[in-house]
Length: 251
Image 1 (cartoon, rainbow, N blue to C red):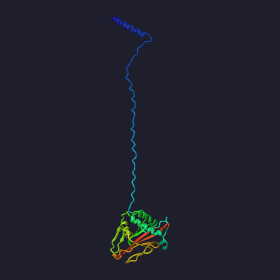
Image 2 (spheres, one colour):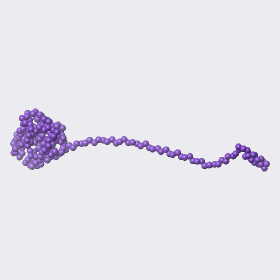
Image 3 (tube, rainbow, N blue to C red):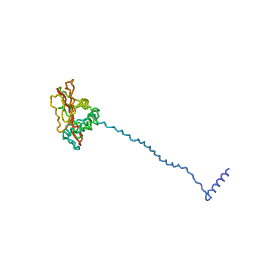
Image 4 (cartoon, rainbow, N blue to C red):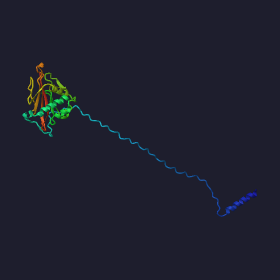
């Protein structure tokens, strides 16, 4: 047995001495960890909301016209011819057509038609009492007179002295229709009136007019007579409403 071991040792020495023969020593090394790949950053896609739609809000016009101080200066863009000879005015059929159109606008409460009849240069003066307050309406405000509830102090009532307050359609419209809806007579540049305790005068010098006269009823001794005067001016050679005022019996 000892001889066998010696033989093996001898063989190993012979192999080591032979050229080109060598033993490689293997060592165990710790593996180099692989670099971790950087994480991929994922960005969420933003949700784009559509712009909110804007709803247009309609503008509601104010139906209560502002009282315009009177008198108003004439608008320079219009050619106003006030001094019309009475004979020429009274023979102008357009003046009576204007009165008929005024009547139709009142009876139908047509603000647009009324606005087209009002002087674009001066507007239309309105008097409920002969010595009461004067209110001037230009065409823009005249368009809303049948809708407006704007309260006007028209002055003190003859006799009682009580103040008369109300909108145009409450006070003026009903009074105008009291004549227009009856059998009335027309007179050019002449005031028609029943019995009075005052002198009925037209206060607008140089402005021609028509008087619409209801003579009253016999049942009331004709004391319920009623007159409206309608003054006109010419703008661009066309007649327009310039001023209206009424006369009645005053106690």
